[in-house]
Length: 230
Image (cartoon, rainbow, N blue to C red; front, side, top):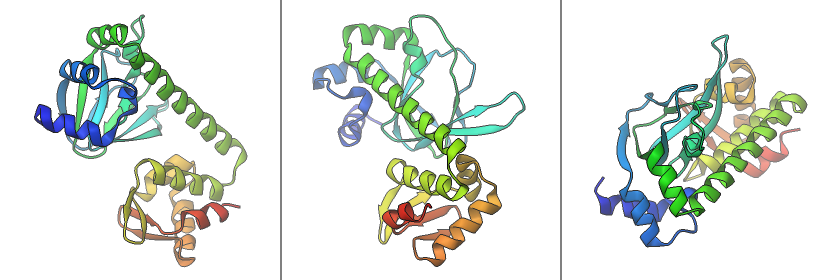
């Protein structure tokens, strides 16, 4: 993207990471970044590797995941364009990335190396405040996920995952909100089997609340889906 295209994209996205900063400050911060392109399914950050860069996704989509010692993958968070990740690079003591991040679609990101983003945060403290607010939101999300996994039924968990994704990565189309996601990914996020996810989605489709197609789910009645959790 050209500098003018990046500026226009950021005006449309209104990233939380740049919230509250004056335009000259934003221009200075963006000018210090490099643009990187990531092909779909490529790894953007690696769990445990040194957190050498901070990323701001400006197009495409990504998701973070955690790999257990036993080799099981747990998807943690979906990242639409406008989201920041790799915030460990802001810390004064060098740390590793807590999770890995994968590009779900062909994506572009603004990338700052650790020394640069830390220098910018010293000059523009609002960057650090915004990063802390984003980290707090992630923590709230993980807390809700933990409560859901320990206290809620499979039906409730899958409905909550769908509703959360609707507000996060869904896009409005005729007839509802569409999610580009596979049954297997929904099952992993809700901690249910793919069979259970498919069965519940089929049930909700018969009730007219969703429409399934290959790799996509159309949420027709989010409010009804919320009431149908119990």
